[in-house]
Image 1 (cartoon, one colour):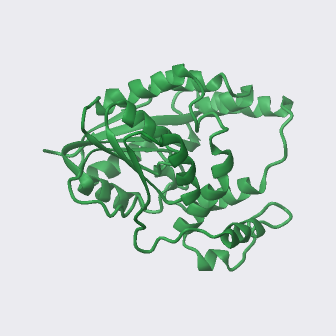
Image 2: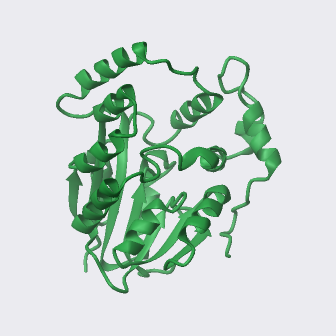
Length: 289
């Protein structure tokens, strides 16, 4: 397995350092951690810590045949089905999207910063036309024009430098290749009834017996405050940046209702309302040629 230049797997000491970076109040402590690690390192280490429970959460893993069919229909709508095409799944995590792309007929390469995530993905994708590597979505080290499709799910809102990332994805796509970005604006309510749904979610939380916020929540909030889309990942801004990178035929698709209905069957009421209040979308585009 290759390891991109500058990438280092995170030893156990690093995980312990992250855990000790949370003080007793649940607030990220101002330690040497921020000075010794880049933001990208912190993102990698955060998701490595989350890898053990990642597949247990609706919205991460797929829990029903209905949800799987809805995901396949969404990607087929924007990317098409193929026999022999090559797909690059960025921030591939535990392999959920890689498996969907393989089912659509693509030969898939998955890149993720977290070796802990990749270890789980390798167990799930054994025997499938899927290769998994440690890699950086902003600097893939892939050859020019080598992929028919680039796909991501819940990556763009975490990127330190989306403009650079989009230029990189443009580079690795073949002429006529397509990109599909599934993401969410968790900061700003969705157009229409988003504000009302957010209010209802807060009311529902008052009646739910929720555990106290974990230390992970504080660390997550600290990281989010420093990414490019800290004020919200609006699909219109994603589309604008794709255009600046050279993409054409840019589409914003908010019709993910079938996916969300299927996921909602496994969520408590307050979580369903909260997610429904968020602007969840797919942005697709094409490289000219």
